[in-house]
Image (cartoon, rainbow, N blue to C red; front, side):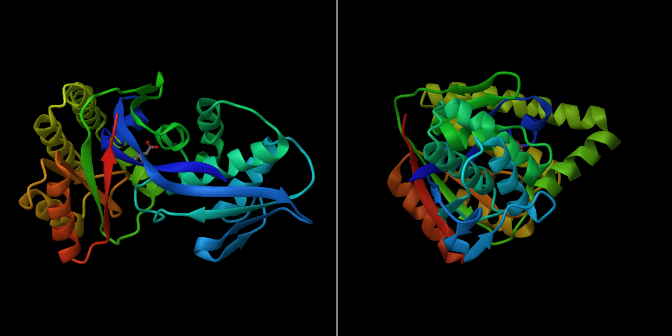
Length: 300
Ligand code: MEV
């Protein structure tokens, strides 16, 4: 099975669309795909009970599948079967994970060899179908995983560190569209360019400091940076009452910091803990509010 991973953005979402750096970590959960020769081209996503035929004018998955097939070596028609372990529209990079898994499965069937970095670059075409103007962070992390700093002009830069930390991801249950959130921020940028640029500069400085905090295993500092980033996302109107409730609960339960993650306007929040036991308590407080959640350890 070919794999594409989900991701959690720790610092810098939206600023990254405007050329600023962002920090993200890859998830062990994501999408798994397998391609086989078939009578017609078809994409089967069993998890969602969905069967899609490629159609350049069709709905998003049909268009993305058509794009992936048109860019892959022409050959016999294929069936690509996909299992997805992530919620869609929740800020965890689901579309990129599926795209990377599908392209890797097509590569495998057709004997195409490329590095995970090249696979990540290739998946930007899939992501453009879904998100219009993606920065590239989701597809690069989906392909390469790990903890990394990403900047459009420089690509992924892996972060190495000695001490693990834990993330608790809580789902607001509110679906959101990355394309629409990015478009809203673009409208704000058009209306108040100087104001938006100041926010993106502040996000860049949080991401740069966050990298140093991870490298120094200074988790309390990383948590404070995440709280500040959440305030900036709030200034862009990207939080919701439900996300605020989950962020506040995570902080009260002892998280070092908590914020919206991904495009916002719904989707997930993420909380930082330095110990696994504390992460368990934070998760329990989110579940107590009815939010589905999971814990992931970030290892170097
Ligand atoms: C989405 O996961 C992150 C955003 O910054 C959009 C992007 O980088 O393409 C909101």
